[in-house]
Amino acid sequence: MSWTLYTFAMSHYSEKIRWTLDLSRIDYREVRMTPVFHIGPALIMGKRGQTTLPILKTPTATIQDSSRILLWLEKNQAPLALIPKVASQDIHAVERHFDAIGKDVARFLYAASFGTGDAHILKLWTDDATPAKAAFVRAAYPFIRWAFKRKLNITQKGAARAQKRITEVIDWLEGQLSDGRTYLVGQTFTAADITAASLLAPIACPSQHPVYGDPAYQRTMVGATEPWRDRPALQWVRKMYELHRGVIQTEACARRAA
Ligand SMILES: N[C@@H](CCC(=O)N[C@@H](CS)C(=O)NCC(=O)O)C(=O)O
Image (cartoon, rainbow, N blue to C red; front, side):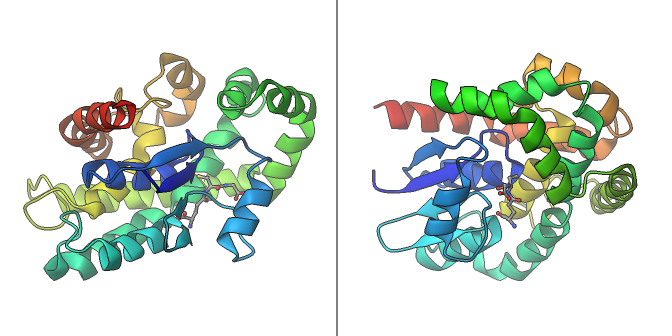
């Protein structure tokens, strides 16, 4: 197995690629990184002056950014069932809608949980850390939180704007689904559905997701997710996870263990 996917366990952009690789039955090793300690490796591997994950490393290329990774897979793993050629443009158009609110989702949820949910955030940030890294993140938490707030513009105003933009995209999704369709592009499950479901998963909290399905996460976010929890769009996200994630995830884990 010579592909490696660098992720954060709780990252919705990482989930988009993890799900795509799992469903495409591509073998890879997942390296779950610890915030702060990801910065150096991401800068070096990405070579774009960016510190974001996911990053996919293959024997022939290292690609940073989930939409660039999808484009690379489309070109280099063709034919990719999740991006049929005839539907490619429509799929990427849907992808852009949801990628655009990824940071708003993080901004809004952190704004609501910093202060009251710090214990759980610390747990999420240290779950995949070595003891020494975990001790560092715990000790530096007040500073990391401050830096994070600045970087993501986590202010009351920023959170209010994020809430508005998330609501607009949820409205848009419900508009798309209002004719009774199951999938966003064509008659089959595609990368458009994966992107929409992954990016909204931190709000929808599907039980199949290892982080957002955790009752402790759901308790921490209960106030923040409340405005949208029962909306049809969020029910659709949970349905996509039920239909297309649980089994695939179990299969991928079994493949990796074999
Ligand atoms: N446009 C990027 C956004 C990825 C992104 O924002 N990732 C977040 C985690 S969800 C991240 O790595 N944050 C840490 C950082 O920016 O250093 C993509 O599609 O991959």
